[in-house]
Structures are given as structure tokens and as C-alpha cells.
Amino acid sequence: MTAREDAVIVNSLVRQALTSMQDVMGDNGMNAVLKSCGLERFVGNFPPNDLEPAIKTSQYAQLNQAIEDFYGRGGRGILRRIGKASFQYAVREQAALLGVAGVALKLLPERQRIKFILNSTADALKKSNAQVNAWVDDSGDRLAYVDATCAICHSRHSDRPICHLYIGSLTEAVQWATGKEYEIVETHCSAKGDEFCRFEVGAAKE
Ligand SMILES: [Zn+2]
Image 1 (tube, rainbow, N blue to C red):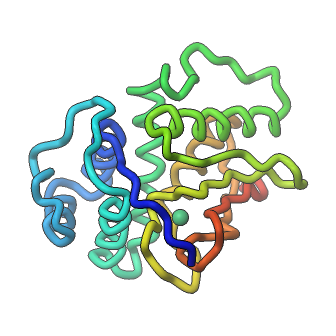
Image 2 (cartoon, rainbow, N blue to C red):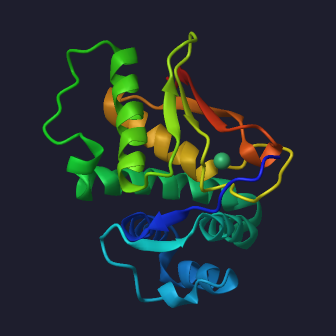
């Protein structure tokens, strides 16, 4: 596993994550998790919607770990739902940053629509934090979204991919662009020792 720089997550992204956690877990669940991973300062006190540094990337990863620990077997599903809520928040509150304000994709082929929203997602992350290194891999049959600076698994170790929140966000993003739920598969994960986390867009669910 390569040592990655411990970057920062900005206030607006932490606010987005906490709002989504509150939606999915309720106040009690969210507050218990925040206390369990040393982030009790956010209980009833979300950061403002600006680009100032909020927490370290490794702390954000520990927050994801804490949700898995708190919900046990249900943790992955909870994290995916938080990811979905998080993309919905971005469309609602940050349409300009995400580059989706007034965009009409209907006339584009489906692959182009998916590519558009994956590129928009990577660009929005890069705009909010210059340390982010994420891109879209268009070279294969299947489109893939790649992040070499994934905040969800930073400093974590696992023998299987663990970036469930990311899968939720990308599932919702592709659904926004196509109107269909596509299966998103995490083929590589930094927590396994891979150089990046890679999410492949699979088949559309019937
Ligand atoms: Zn990851």
C-alpha cells in the first residue's frame, strides 16, 4: 500500500456528507456515530457551506468505518443510501458547481450521458479541492470512474473493496443522467493496496 498524503476535506463537502447521513440515519444514529469516531464537534453543529478545510481525509475515512461498525451487516447498504442522498444534495444545492444547471441530456446516447455526469462529478471534486486526482476511464467496453485520492478508504486496510458510499453516489449520478439504475462495481480499491479506487459502470438493472 502506498502512503498517500493526508489531504483535507472542505466544509461544504462535510456539510453535504453530514446532511446526507442525517437523512438516512436520523439524528440519534448520526450523533452516536460522530461521537464514536471523535467528531462530536459536529453534533448539532454542521460546518458552513464554504471551501475552508474542515477535517483530514483520514478522519473522513474513519467516519465511514464508524458507520460500518455501528450498523454491522447493514452498514454497506446504509453507506450506499448516504451516497445516493449525497448526490441528490449536490444536484439540489450545488448544481452550478456540479455543472448540471440547465443541462439537457435527452438527445445524447446513453454512454455519452453517463460520461458527462462522471466527468462532472470528478470536475466538481477537483474544483472543491485541488489535491483530488479523479478521472473517467473511457478506454474499455465499460466506462469507469477512477479516484487515486479516494477519501473513503484513506489509511484503511481491507481484503475487499470498501468504498460503499462512493458506489451510492455514482449509482445515483448515473441514474440522474439516464433514468436507469446501473450496477456500479468497485474493481480496485486503495484499501486493498491498489493504486486507486476504480468503479465500473456495469449493466442497467431491469
Ligand atoms: Zn476508496
